[in-house]
Length: 221
Image (cartoon, rainbow, N blue to C red; front, side, top):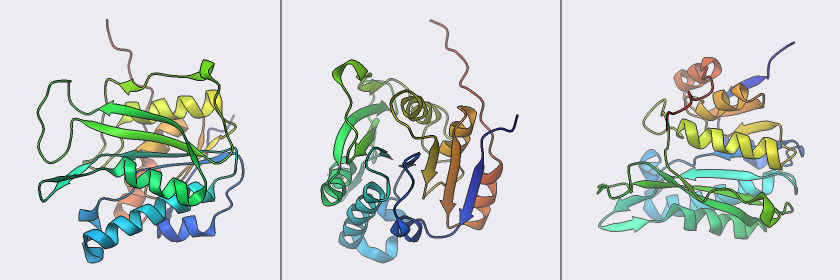
């Protein structure tokens, strides 16, 4: 039997999202670029770009499908930039609501960090899907998991998303319009989900086509 499919497009993720109207079995799962990755926009320009791109992602998926964002805050000029707030601003523009918001520990509790916090946000949004209380899941993920590069989504965070898609949605294809080296794509395939990625860098796109990650080994205790 053939395994799950993976397609990686070398191109512009925003333009891909602007096409919109993904079929009901496709979910967007991504991490939007930080302002340091788009220096030409300036900080305020990046904020507006971020909110608008989050809105595009929420609008692109079908009513009963989901858009999931993994985002890590940053400190700029002594002030925190709350990316969860920016994602939710985009969701409001698209008429999407928050299904869940998880905190992913990037460092053990009690750790002091500088520049980036010891946690990341994992947010799931939808226009039409509702989750009954009995389908609740942990709000805090104790580990980020392996990162394939410095800007990657953590492997265990990706696995949490893949498990949710399989258990609580009809989505069977993951679309990551800013896929980097393809961690989410590889984890999706490992869980039997098809995957589509978009990446500007030809080198990263090529690596994303071939990255393979098996299930995370069970932890003792």
